[in-house]
Amino acid sequence: MSKKSEFVVVANRLPVDRVTDGDGEASWRRSPGGLVTAIVPVMQRRQGAWVGWPGSPDEDVEPFEAEGLSLIPVRLSARDVEYYYEGFSNATLWPLYHDVIAQPVYRRSLWEVYERVNRRFARAAAEVAAEGAIVWVQDYQLQLVPQMLRELRPDLRIGFFLHIPFPPMELFQQLPWRRDILYGLLGADLVGFQSRDAASNFVRLCRRFCDLRTQGHEVMVADRTVRADHFPISVDANELITLAADPKVQNRAAQIREDLGNPASVLLGVDRLDYTKGIQQRLEAFIELFEDERLKSGDAVFVQVATPSRERVKEYRILRDEIELQVGRANGLYAELGAPIINYMHTSYTREELAALYLAADVMVVTPLRDGMNLVAKEYVACRSDLRGALLLSEFAGAAQELHRAFLVNPYDIGGTKNRMWEAMHASPAERARRMRSMRRRVIEHDVDLWAKSFLDALENGRSGTAGASGR
Ligand code: ADQ
Image 1 (cartoon, rainbow, N blue to C red):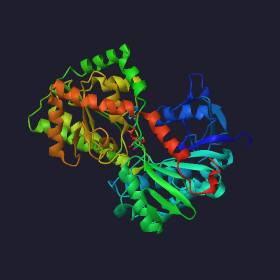
Image 2: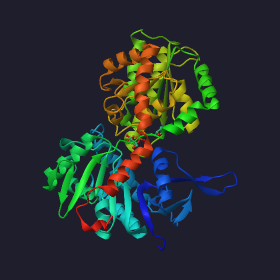
Image 3: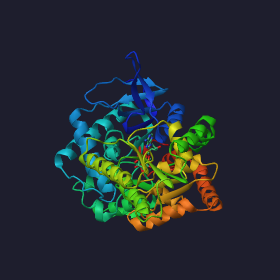
Image 4: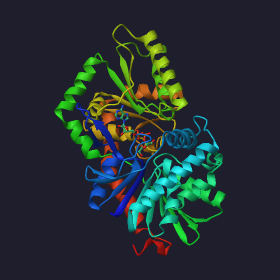
């Protein structure tokens, strides 16, 4: 590899998807999503490179340029995908880091592949990074990369950001490879989390399981100081405001309401189909309002959009079946001909269609059992310049730390959720506007640009305990 980069992002996936046109011609298109939108401008300014998996197993892809980015593919075999991605990342770490909502799988064979694949990512990053470059590693699939990279390239300035929660001691303690993960992360100069609690959990665990000295948010490792801090991620508020102001999107929102039969209340859920998102619990609360005869068909419609996700992992298949059974049963009991009480869509939507759905919804229902942040809550708030929507938000979403004026709920408490849902549906326009105005201020001021900038400023300017940072 000849061309070296001053700024390198390392993530499980490359920020582009392969698309094939009508003539069978394949090309790469930038993936949708906040992370990509936030980081791409920074990369363009700094000759950035992005290291990641292109998305199909057993395929060798040469480094290439797309969307003005330098992309460095990492090859994964079908077995790697099964053991490292579906296995250790999504069947071990994901449930463990989300309060053990599902039972984590602890298998040595998964761990071994996780380690091997992390090393491959670290090598690829080491090869492409210029002397003293900034390397920003993303998320739970790559927690060993910081340490592996530091061993290969002590001159680099390494940052790590975890997009999901970081569990407390009582849970993390279960992980047979707990020390390896902690030391993996400690290879970074700065370890970023979504919440203050997550950062504190990490520091406490380093003290307890690695016997390291800590002070406030800093951990002393040999001759270095590693800083742990929180950087709550956000959305591109301007993009969403523009989208929501587009007459095409607004007309589509009106059309959606009409298609739903213009009920008094439209409630909306938008999630990856994941057991952490609390989809069953929120639908249960909604269905009980019919059972209790507080609602009848025509009063309210729930639109649940569930993006297909991780369908090769067993828990996800079971969850899909359970939700589909629940929806079918509820409609069977309470719907009238041509007017289901729950509209369930197992599909992905464009940004325009999502914005139209947000505008059509009187109550946005975001009730995860645990969530690092939850961008859907912030997207909804950004879209509602009209101040007319209400947000029902779980206390267990990172977003609840910032959006205090949402209708907050404990999603495990079905009775409480049901009453709060009712309250949100019947709140006066003045109350909705008051709450929404305050939440919008937060989301607009703390957008995704500020998130990326805060992290990178802290990484570049933060105190470094080592000469390895090469004078930066
Ligand atoms: P996720 O668990 O994927 O992210 P979330 O933050 O809600 O959860 O982001 C989902 C994104 O996908 C949103 O931008 C949303 O608009 C989009 N999306 C969802 N359903 C869609 C659909 N049907 N069609 C199109 N787009 C859809 C992880 C963590 C979160 C954390 C983020 C970012 O679990 O806690 O907020 O990373 O750090």
